[in-house]
Length: 154
Image 1 (cartoon, rainbow, N blue to C red):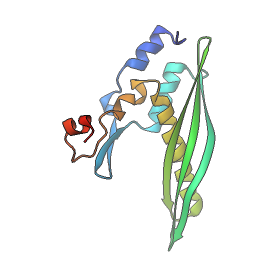
Image 2 (cartoon, rainbow, N blue to C red):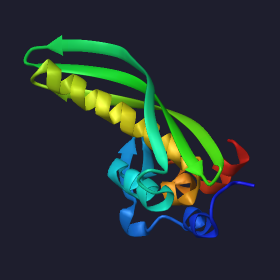
Image 3 (cartoon, rainbow, N blue to C red):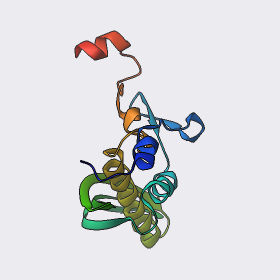
Image 4 (cartoon, rainbow, N blue to C red):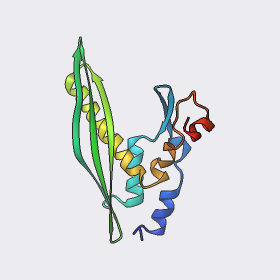
């Protein structure tokens, strides 16, 4: 038994509202995603403000470069989500990446760290279902590849 109430299970299986799905292009692929603030708001609405915790368990700087008048850097983060569902405690983890570029090095690092933590949080929450964007992960493929070929692994 999951420990989730029927109300929580119903909310977890509901699809993401299309108005909250954003799109961006990366390396020739169109990616769909929900913003970090929405994932956190959904977690509060479904699990309750005191029903879940987020812990950043690992941060790692991948690179740091300064050139001319700006700094760019990248970080990875690992986040643990702990949800209390009745008498059951559910733990999920996610890994994310963040990139930052700014005139001030401190600003670049802050952007990259926040982006990595947010990405990891969204990935961990997505394991709880569609309400956190799980359904957005299916069908990710290069824009030039037809859907049938992508399904066949070509």
